[in-house]
Image: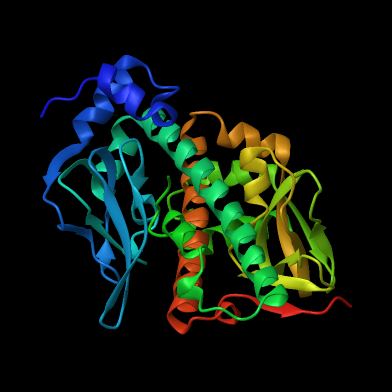
Length: 179
Length: 167
């Protein structure tokens, strides 16, 4: 699968906003396009993860695994990315990411990003700034979400968390997921 | 804490392992070290950011005022070697929470102007600093995600957030 900057830029405008065409070409070289079948798992809840995925086509579900039960807490589509936390700070995933339909993703491993930092520090710097701004926004939104939850608890009759609307927002906060 | 001691401290933190001696020296010059008593408020909800902080010794709590009710929610605790005050600086917004010293603390502060110089440029030291910031944010998010996950598992908000009355 061949991707060029003319395709990459409109798909990921924030990521490529300050990148020249040549810089985008370098980034494309580091990305590994993968076709994922429906129901295939990209990231397994609780397992070590050292790769992130940019969604090119299709849709990915964010799933929490509880005992025998899977709880879908959100989904992301083209232009979104999942798992940047793993690239910034490798560790166990906080949720599973499963293809809701056949999808094409661009994988970026921790190792590939580390090599990019050495060979093309300006490109790595631009990516780090975008990721940091995104994570900062998500942390702030997470704080707000918690406060909303608390006020609901105080003002309303107790309702199962898993039955409330807010559960749909959780997917945007797990495993480096946005969108 | 004297400047030379700050350098020694930075060398003991794994996050600074990638930094060269000259880069650490640049950090030493950019940071200001101060000691604060229990209860000191580093930032208030609604204030604009003017600095970020690195905890050299002690603990701080990140709190947020509860809606329609007295008191605060405890959102996070940060310890030696961790940074706080990043969110508002990165996105140039008002603080969404307050940060308070729990016991005596010693922190190194980096003024907004120095932060922007390090965060928005592409010099080698900037790349290391950006990685430091991104790693801290990733860890904060990971911690939050785990707490949120625990709340869903136990099916109650109390598993995620501690509340307490205002003094």
